[in-house]
Image (cartoon, rainbow, N blue to C red; front, top):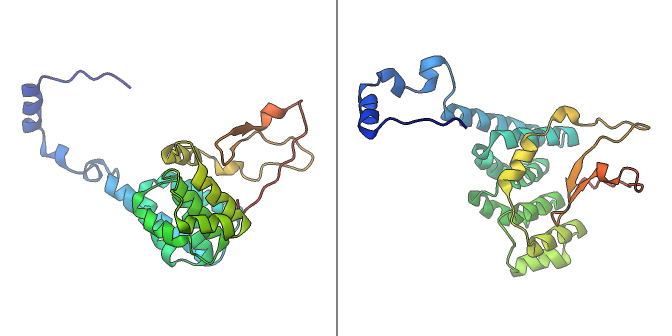
Length: 227
C-alpha cells in the first residue's frame, strides 16, 4: 500500500469546500464506471439467473462449480437471493443455495438454514449442517442431536462435525479461495495421464496435497458428490 501524506485538517477542509461539484457525483456519472450499488445489483441479477438454471433441474457438477465460483466472486450481496432460493426453489436450487451459503456465514441466512434442516432432500439438509457450522460449533440442541443420530448417514456425519468442530471457521477465507478458482481447470484429468496437483481439506481442517504423496505411496481417490 502506498503511503499518502494527508494535508493538515484546515487545508483538507478547505479542499472539500472548494472541490468541484463533479467530485460529489457518482462515478457512473463522471466516467461511465459502475457504483457499488450498480455492482451489487448486477451481482443479484446474475445470482437469480444462476439459480434459475437449477430450477429447471440439476445441470451437473461442472455448472454447479462454475456457479459457486461466480457467487463467491459476487460477494455478500447475493445472500438474500440464496436465502430466497433455499426457501422457495426446486430441490436442486435449494441444495445449491444451502451449499453456497457455506461461503458467507451471514446471520440473516441462519433462520432459513435452521428450517432447511427439516428439508425432505438429503443434500439440502447436509449443506445446511455445513453452513450452520460456519457460525461456530453448534450447541447440542435436541433437533441437532436427532439429525446426528437418526438421519441419513451423510447428514449424520456432517452434523456430528458441526457439533464437534474445534476450529475457528473463516467464511471470508473460504470464499476467497473459491473465488480464485479457475473454472477452466475443471475436468482436466485424463485417463493414463498424471493427476493434476490439488489441495483438499477434510472436515477436521487437515490439509492434504497430492504432491506430498509423490514417490511415497499409492493414492486412492474417492469422490462422494453428496459430501
